[in-house]
Image (cartoon, rainbow, N blue to C red; front, top):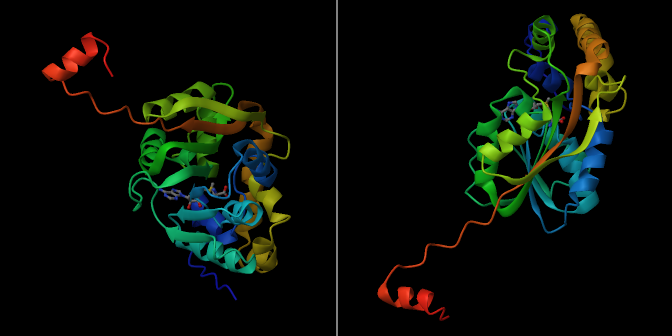
Length: 282
Ligand SMILES: C[S@@+](CC[C@H](N)C(=O)[O-])C[C@H]1O[C@@H](n2cnc3c(N)ncnc32)[C@H](O)[C@@H]1O
């Protein structure tokens, strides 16, 4: 049985600690339906090697392994998430395909050109986007793809609402307008950048409350958790209320790009190559 250590009150936990403690499976805009729609658009192949960066409790990685049969490594900075993700992989019988490791996406331990696809869901919104994308770029093979589901800002957020958003999701929360997401990918070196499946935030846009209703990892301990920590429901309602009242400012989409093939090494500039170039000899 999974033992969840409770050393802090809910009110003291930051957003990631709260998600990890709950074990939320799809803590991103649009929830699991958006994941399914995006995976469809990505057309992942069984032979592809995938990194799920900021994998949380591993729902997407395990689903991908189960439905496509590809190999995946999921990384997350939070050890509780990694513990729950490993448990999920075991329960779902995909431990032979999925591996979970605790790691910081700013500095991954993988060699360059390692993965065919990097997926991420709601992690760059909290971090330095270009720095994260540069690391994704490094670990991707040439022609490798990045597909990152992120919250998109549809209108300028007034300062008071920005403060409220930060109080709910953390001080570093910074959703960008669509073109700025694409600029961040381009700045990291990606090409063919686009936002797939753009959507407005729906009425039911609160990820935690939605996922609480259906993910088995959560349901198991929720009653016990709510009883143990009375601040939980208040905190969840605060986050849900913010998104409901202000959903017109927010949307989400799959921020996609491709790592280009490196250019061929420069031709040697000797006399022979000059003759070949001038006389168009092969
Ligand atoms: C909003 S949750 C999304 C989790 C998961 N992708 C999902 O959609 O359910 C953000 C996740 O990013 C992780 N995270 C935050 N900063 C990180 C970092 N620097 N490196 C790796 N993971 C990080 C958090 O621990 C958390 O699990």
